[in-house]
Length: 329
Image 1 (tube, one colour):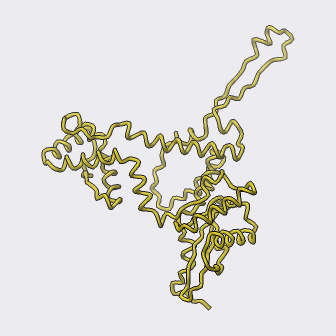
Image 2 (tube, rainbow, N blue to C red; image 1 turned 30 degrees about the vertical axis):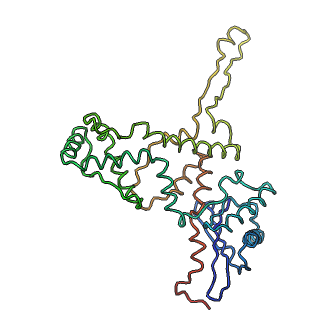
């Protein structure tokens, strides 16, 4: 499968161009990308002009039926062009996974919105943590007691609790990172201070995780259906067989006949049950690791190969417009 990125640019001579870049993971599990189209774009930059330019390029390369996703910026004409492309692929029965992941929006353009939206899903817990930290930092006595509890339960005190600035989501990340480190200390302090009533519950540490696992399972099921993986690799199915002797006496044949069931674990559950990797090597290659585990996780490896091949920004196409001092003959 091939994923695309595309971007448009207008030169000083007011000539418009469109760059189309293809991304895929090859048979050796190496991420590849190449510019397959760099063409002048006729004005105006309407949805029809953009979509026609993309389809023409795909046909030229013979990959019009192998496209899984396209990553574009957030211009409205790109949204409409994407709808035309989806309609085209759907009409030919080549819209993979019903177009659920077809249009990928460039994270370089909307990263802050993504983070803010993500934080919104845990807003209730976020407010509790923010107010907890403020409450503790208002009193040196509270901070002292908090530190004593940390030492008692064996939590390292080398990280201090910090508040965030709402408009700087990286500071929110630091606050949450510190709060997670002190999670048991917060719960312990809440038992000793009746005014400390905002501490997040244990359930609020687990509800979001279950939501992520649910979405992962849903995607995994789609891949199972799409690739028609054998039932024994997908489900907790049972393989049964009979062992019988050639006794002529039916009674002894019955005694010596037995059914053996072999339980096979659900592939996704087996993967999630594996211990987390301790990534000490800065050159760790996640694609190489998935390549090594293709036989163990046949469906998940297919998911990984296509998902890791999806670019999250249009930088690959945008950079084609930046000569950066390069010689152009």
